Image: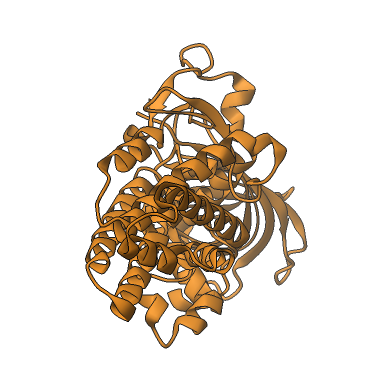
Length: 437
């Protein structure tokens, strides 16, 4: 079932789109080769010039290939070995493969993205150093393996500069909340600062080459160049340069300004504005609060009635979730009609309910809740409806959510215990949360 849902999922959170990863990877590889060529020149040792030629000859094509590799790594391929797999072509074009990897994409977000960069970068430098000791095609093959590992490192490094990939706990957030929160910050942009004290505003996917992201692009390209240069230098020169690695560490986004997004209700009521320092700088390593769904609209088909009844009440409801100030249990308000049933005609109906999250499974695709609510079937002659408490499951497919609910209920006017079951289709309009607690 989960595999089927993954196949029909909408696009999940990506740091940069494919073309943007290609652009960053291509430019950084080309600039790294330019630095090495200027340093070694035509008078360098023959062995160095041979290895420099292996790495940087046919530079236009080599840089483009590396850019494509950084785009495939992480989003299409699960590990460096996938580049050599006989199924590489299928994985590169398969939507199923993309969605399966995107669903469990917490490593693309802070604080994990920089850790993934370091893990793969260390592997790539070690592989490049080993390749520098070889000759002929053995050296070529060794560098190729190092570049596959470097592509993974630099993919995560690119993502570390995306505004939507910082400021909230991705692993504790549902899929829909993560996507919407991610998209909001990509458009809004974030003010970040590195360990060297440099400050700039960065945006996210779809905005790499926009004028407003000029500073963000400059910082990302500079650090990506240092990263791939470190790998190429290990192969060409045969030494590891820790100064490059420390400079990357100093240049990574370190703190962000005001990471939290307030809910619509909090903004309307002005909750939190007086007692929170919105200009405070928050270290990315300390961010621990998840994103949560804020504004959600839905359409629900709800059945309720006594267990012995053969004709339960059917209600069609349009609803809206309202975030209550300072608590995470949202209030749901719905309105609609109950359908004709036996001698009963069409009536207006109202519904109100609360939900409380139990937890997430399948990397946030399934969001489990306790639910409680009441349906009022508006009749002139008598009070009718149900009060229930039970279980609600959100199946989150991009911004869209399928809601399944089942619960025992107390039913009026029969004054009997019965059931409530519903199927809903929802759309997440905005998200809130994030920050440090």
